[in-house]
Image (tube, rainbow, N blue to C red; front, top):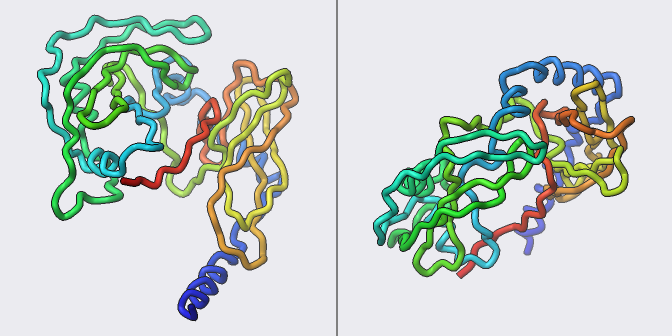
Length: 291
């Protein structure tokens, strides 16, 4: 009991550094202008508005809630095997259509190519296979069907390969779009940290947006700020660390912001990373594994 009390005291002290300070308005405005100058007219700006940028990659993660724990470990480590002959034909290209009516005709990949991508180990393996080895994810079927798919220009329908795995109720899915026509979603520059994760419009309030952001349980939220131009809007959630001792826990929260005019076709950018937040707030549950 004494050891536990000592450990908790240490955590409290380490989490009370108060290093996160409130950004003055003038500094936020300077940062917003810097973000706009870097983004406007860039190669990523053009791809985001007119190209095909998958926001979550071409692999579509299954719903992990209720999934046996071994499945995630096996998938992370790339423990796959084929127990079926995959379809051999090359699918014909397809025309994608975005909510604004714009279209793009794209080539599709074979089931074998999709399986090769889907079965790769993760770049970061959080949990290695147990000493006796991972239980193999044995693929027993593959079917091409359309799915809703999140892109930088909205949700569209795309063809995707659905792989059936023995002993697993849910499908493993990989979008059948050729990577040759996609642009990877940008990553934050080194030393820059995400503030606004996602956003969505507030029904019947055309000038209001709901922002999803990350903060520590020791933080105090002072409100939101926006810097608006004709084509871009930079947003910030004004958060400051508390000087009080507390056990720091990462939290995801939501807060509303009111713009001077509706967002319209202007692009929203996060002041922390200079990158667009994900359109549409996702309620993602935590997954702790299980038997």
